[in-house]
Length: 219
Ligand code: SAM
Image 1 (tube, rainbow, N blue to C red):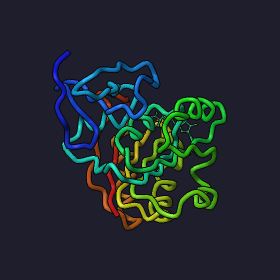
Image 2 (cartoon, rainbow, N blue to C red):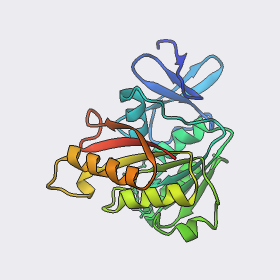
Image 3 (tube, rainbow, N blue to C red):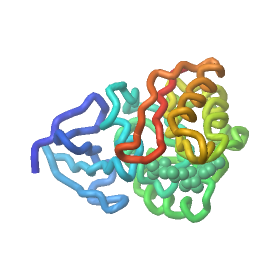
């Protein structure tokens, strides 16, 4: 294989075409991704068709602003595909990974049992009182929940957990199937700005995920 070179993100390498994260749990692949050895470390290939964060990092010129010691509040963990790559990135931090579906949560538990920086939470992202029994504050909010009220949940968690940075993976069709995805992304940007937050970038992910936009937000 081609050599890997560092990217601007901690513990993320690139071969020019693909991204890789340094595997915190050596020898284990989470969703069948390729494992490769480079410079005495093992890396996991990060599939942008399975993870919107990889798609965002490949498509955007803006920074993802993830730091290796960040505390992450992750809403919509599913079985842990993206959570596992963020776990590789924030190797000195912690991810609180929230998932509402019991079935997905069981898979999440199986996939993160050997990763000590993941705290799995079975719960509803709307219930901030429940979430605040686990954490008071987070550096980074990541939301990917495909719900009609996804923007309101995002702004409410940014405020409640005083997050420095937020990444909203907006699924436009969950808000309105008949409106244009671009118009929905514009409305979401406006709603976030009106809540007192700053939208740094809006990235169309449709090369990898149809009708999805990534909104990078700062307090
Ligand atoms: N982020 C995942 C990844 O990249 O690996 C994929 C997430 S999937 C698109 C959306 C997930 O959000 C589903 O597993 C769903 O059960 C979960 N979800 C939906 N509504 C939720 C809510 N209110 N609270 C927590 N999780 C929710």
